[in-house]
Length: 138
Image (spheres, rainbow, N blue to C red):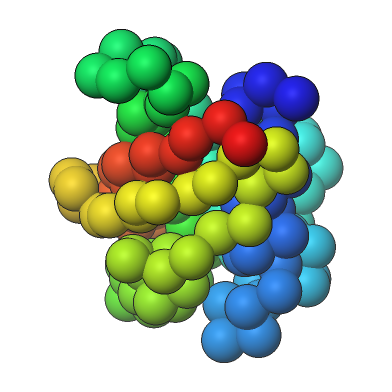
């Protein structure tokens, strides 16, 4: 299985299995790959692969990817930050089970935060980070 297919399943499983995180979300499955559905209830998490690929540093098939993982909240910036903190606790320097791959590195790299205001003046806060995920084909 390609890492592009296996990694989203692994991240979804890890994040939805983290009770400290899911307790802050609209539901225990409020974690989405690429984007949340239009009808998704806040608060939730979105992740997606941003960049990366083969690192070609050895004869083994290894990948080095950057994944953007962030929490969204309608409450305030502090709640978005709390969701982000739980994501960090679940992933930074922790093991990740990826089907067909041996994960050997996850690290938080760049922090992001913002607020979006729609036409009706509804605010949505976001806090998250890039995570570097490295894995070797098994």
